[in-house]
Image 1 (cartoon, rainbow, N blue to C red):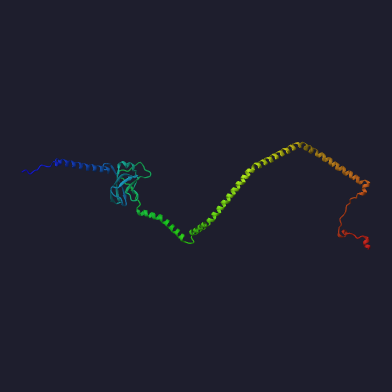
Image 2 (image 1 turned 45 degrees about the vertical axis):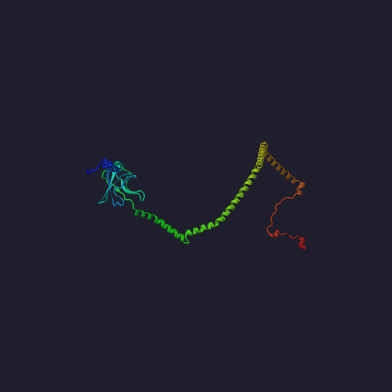
Amino acid sequence: MQDDAAPPPRFARIRVKISVFFIVAVAGMIGVTLLVSYKQGVFVRHTSIYFYAADVVGMNKGMAVKLFGLPIGKVKEMDISDRGVKVELSINSDYTPRLPRGSTARMTREGYIGAASVQIVPPASSGGATLAEDDVIEFVPSRGLTEVMEEFKNQVTPIVNDLRRLLADVNRPEGEIRKSISAARTVLEQLPAAQQEARQLLRDADRAVLSAGRIGAQVEQQLPGITGKLATTLDSFSEAAVHIRDVTRDSREPLRETLRQTPALLREGEELVRDGREIAGAARNAWPLRNLMEERGMRTLPVDSFESAPQPSPAAGQR
């Protein structure tokens, strides 16, 4: 009797299939490893730079290193030294020309709870030299939550104090705020009366505007007649002025002749007056008229009251 049985047909060439499976699995693992290594920058040349920090709370190995928000490397090693914690940064050598000497490093977060990273900050004015292998840069520590809260407290404290003083003024009966509220309340109480007065003023203004419109219409209606009368009056004035000018022009020569003869007439008048005086003197010295005319003599004024008093007549004395 034979002990070895023939294998089933489905297990034919099973060793070849298992070998191919293992080969494919190993090749896949190697490919994934190479891909991860490539993604991690294993096949890229890196430059190591360092900085020293007093503490590295929140920092760990493998943390991304960024320049202007772009990943350029990672944190490679962290070790305790005499100057604090020595941190080694592995920077992609392709970005090294973008890192001038004088650059600083600081730890940042994407928002308040986002992922942390090391940010490289170039100086404001950079020279021609760039960072090289094993260079040391300065680390600027970022403010912690305690410092942020302290600064927030310092900024909020004056506002809270002002609010407290404001509430104290509000609660004080003799405070300015209470007085202002009372004055505002008084003004609001007087507002309806002022509104009524304003409405009455507007109604009066409307009436005045309507009256002015009617007066304007009347003036507009009467304006042609007034204008015609005014034109007629002006024409009359013009005619009178022309007539006066003509009369003045016509009487200019006679007037000038009269003025020229005036001195001769005055001399003749003087001679006539002189002749009249001589004739009157001769007539007065004539005999019939001389006795009729009383000669004018000089009279003296009385000196005292006795002389000025009327003298009694002799007949009165005899009585």
